[in-house]
Length: 216
Ligand SMILES: C[S@@+](CC[C@H](N)C(=O)[O-])C[C@H]1O[C@@H](n2cnc3c(N)ncnc32)[C@H](O)[C@@H]1O
Image (tube, rainbow, N blue to C red):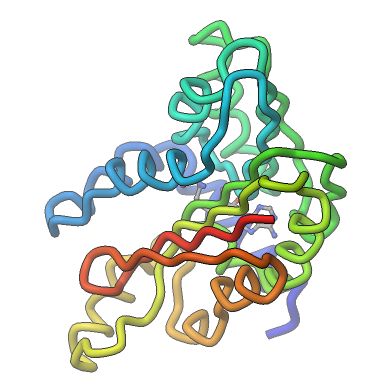
């Protein structure tokens, strides 16, 4: 499918999902998928300090914002990028409810986004694999990082030793979020390892999820 049509379908899907996104995220706990523990680990892996600037690609409803806030504090800056208006509307509501004044939301296709120079951290959770230009985005982000800055991806991948039926079941429960088996051909962790000199990867949930960290 051409990328533009794929993106339009994905945007329409997330517009529909936005209202119940935060609740459905908890659904995976029923299968032992400790999503929020993984989010915390991913944010910790950014190694941020108070006052730092961090960009989140595909920030959605802002489920990571509270963890990022804890790291960068009120003097820090958080930039959330997402292409779906309804997801960002919910993120905006969260920001207002919490009274945060250091978060900027940008509605755009991440492939079009220009990173500010000298950011300390870039995060993407359960989003970068959905974006066909993931390699280009990771490269541009790596260029914008300051020395010592980190790019962290938390996402799903095809587990190496899972039987076919289990993989199909995994894809079926993730389909409401636009996950399809052909996304398994996209390997953002390889891009991180290519563009950043220091690279580490942590396998989660039997290899179905991973946290990949590239440091400049
Ligand atoms: C599964 S949600 C993840 C949201 C959030 N990162 C989280 O962990 O809860 C995927 C998000 O990626 C966004 N997204 C998908 N393709 C995108 C693109 N090309 N540019 C920007 N955002 C995109 C969707 O709008 C959606 O909000």
